[in-house]
Length: 148
Image (cartoon, rainbow, N blue to C red; front, top):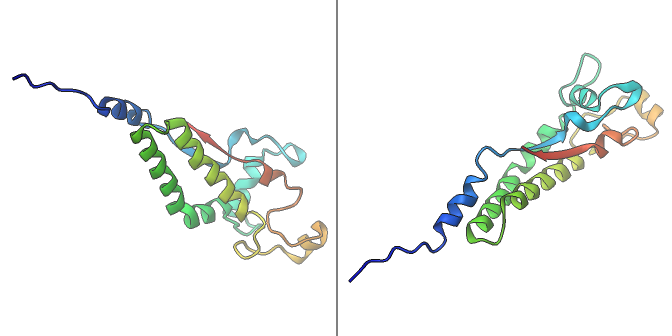
């Protein structure tokens, strides 16, 4: 009697999972977001707002989104890996699902008065509203993700 070793999908699973190796999903204001007021790169003034300056309080929209949603992001990644394993999903779909959720969660923090330092009264008068990090809406519109 001969023993037959048949691959029932393990090799496909290993091949697909290896495609995840080295992939990262980055979200926020990316370097290629362009420029805003007076030609200043959007990533530059997003950084000033995220970390603060001597004149601007820290409004960490990316860090807040990450802290509040890390488990959800990992859950989406886990489900994506499960789909890769069972053959109903692929690496690109998994990474895109995580990136889209990250982008959307970061955008939700921008302008959220309950999570960010309030604007100064002079800023509220100038803008006509008290939503932090919202002036023209350009920065919020530039929140994106990239899979590397």
